[in-house]
Amino acid sequence: MSSPDPQVRAARNHSTQTSAPGRGSAGRGPVVAITGAATGVGDLLTRRLVGSDEIKQVIAIDERRGEVSEAQWHILDVRDPAIAEKLRGADVVVHLALDLDLETDPAARSAYNVRGTQTVLTAAAAAGVHRVVLCTSAMVYGALPENDIPLSEDAELRATAEATGVGDLLEIERLGRRAPRAHPGLNVTVVRPAVLVGGTDTALTRYFESPRLLVVAGSRPTWQFCHVEDLVTALEYAALEKVDGELAVGCDGWLEQEEVEELSGIRRMELPSAVALGAAARLHRIGLTPSPAGDLAYTMHPWVVSVSRLHDAGWRPQWTNEEVLAALLEEVEGRHTVAGRRLGRKDATAAGAAGATVALLGTAALVRRARKARRRM
Image (cartoon, rainbow, N blue to C red; front, top):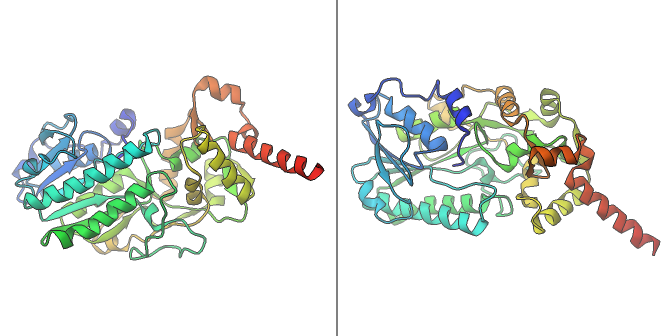
């Protein structure tokens, strides 16, 4: 998963920091292996589990050694078949070694994510692991105008590969469904967070770095957030086998677009659907923005999810949507993003403080001028 900013991570470690060095090794519970353990959500989960009386041991796997000395570290690429030997003795694997960076080459990103997941699932089965926990996103349900609010966790996955990284996540889900059939005795649990906040950098968090919140005319945006701390505790539940199957994680309820604008103090910029989608596609095609037009759907249509399975297991989020939004706004303060492209301070100054000069709007203006010119001919 994407790596939290060190300052954010330090500020939030109050709930995920080790409470007693080495305590996890004295536990009587499962041995849990974590891939991607040196950074991001993997680092936070490693810190939490080594301090748990319910965990016997934590095996940490990454391409570099992390800071949690209480874990047993193995340094290797998750695509290396040698990982099977490193997983021997583990009861559960939590696979968090994913690259969802907006700036990564899409082909390289997919090769890493899909091949890595495939290798981990095969290696886990070969090593005698009985449970693998995968972490994808609630984005796999798709953002559609006819979606129920909230969506059931059993709802059909109707997303397409048009948004950043979603194609990879859908393929990871497919691999997760196939694995128990190919490897009898292997259980696969899938955790799907809502809009993840807490040191993450995604198209959806960058939405709040813009001087105006783009709203597509006629759409009904709804916002449900998930703080990384709540994701970590949900992953802990899955690792301890307190919950299984396919489950969503996020804050209770959701916020309407008007509530988001009121809470954030950021005004909207409304554009017709054809103009917004067409402009976004053009900007991405010529390389001006990292986000494809498909990302816009997740700011247009509802994809709020129920978190009933975790609730039934006794889990509760510690953050509300309002609190997570406030934390996100604090985190992105000082950053300037135009149509998904992050600008340096100098660029932002040149762009002007007003959102009317946003690149997306500028492209839309060009489209309108071209239409007027055709009509005059």
